[in-house]
Image 1 (cartoon, rainbow, N blue to C red):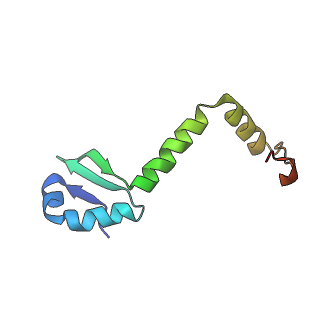
Image 2 (image 1 turned 180 degrees about the vertical axis):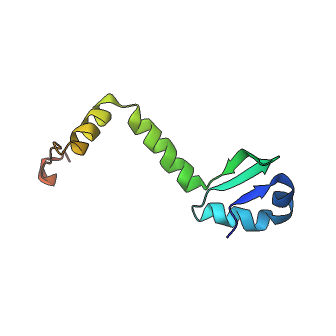
Length: 82
């Protein structure tokens, strides 16, 4: 399946490009052989924004680094507040 379109191609083939993006593929739009726009699904955009938000939280980043180093801490679910 095609994932890169020129602007002219996109004008003709939007009906094919949009469903690809909806299914999670990154669709790239080019002008003069250079990428100028990327089309992604709302779900994928939401996941990217959530990841970016988590990466701005110093506590999350510290815990993530500990996990990557094999030093992560785990607690039973029973310790969660109601």
